[in-house]
Amino acid sequence: MEEDLGSFEALERIVATLRGPDGCPWDREQTHASLKPNLLEECYEVLEAIDDGDKESLCEELGDLLMQVMLHTQIASEAGEFEMMDVIRNISEKLIRRHPHVFGDVKLGSANEVVIKWEALKRDELPPGKSLLSGVPHQMPALAYSHSIQRRAALAGFDWGDIDGVLDKLYEEIEELKGASSHEQRAYEFGDLLFSVVNVARWMGIDPEGALREANKHFRRRFEYMEELCLGRGEEFTTLSFEEQNRLWEEAKKKLGG
Image 1 (cartoon, one colour):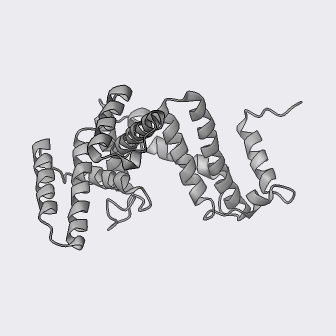
Image 2: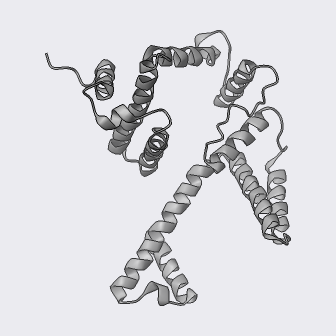
Image 3: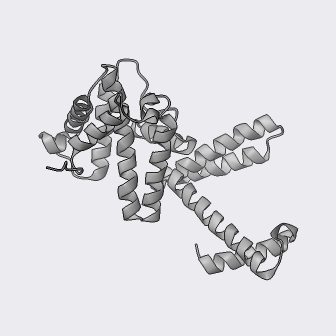
């Protein structure tokens, strides 16, 4: 009988074969460290598929991401560190432990209460003296990292009373940036400004990383449209004045929207 390629066991066997003595030379050479860029790239490709609303691409990219999980687990298995059943058991135990309102007798009435309880359970799992921010990976993109540590601090009670205080802090940081007198000071104040912008996003329920990705996408589409307009009109974009370029920008915004 032909193997069911839709089964988890089949995928395990395929990955083990790729890493085996007669497998793929590239796969056999990989380590946890060498696969880090691939893992990060696959995560971003999943995010792009979600942003684009492309269901077929999302299905494919989730498979590529799963492949990274399988490879890391196979490498660990070969080294005698852990097996796939350990990975699955760990996440299963964690999901049950952190959802006492589903698998236990705790009563929670809203998604916000669930988040607060989740963070409280995570704090209870920390060793004595461990920072509440210690679980946030330093390798995260800076905007996402800023958002995560601000959220955790807020759940511990360290937060503004309302968004007016958050916005006032943002305006204060803008003024401090304007008053900076050296490059080093400007860089420092600019970091504080970005941090405050992320805090505004958190208060408004906006994912700053996702919002910036969308802004980048809009800018690129508009800029490429301006270049297409120039090409069709026999003009060289780089030779236009800023005023002429700006008129093209407004034309692109009107055409493309957003």
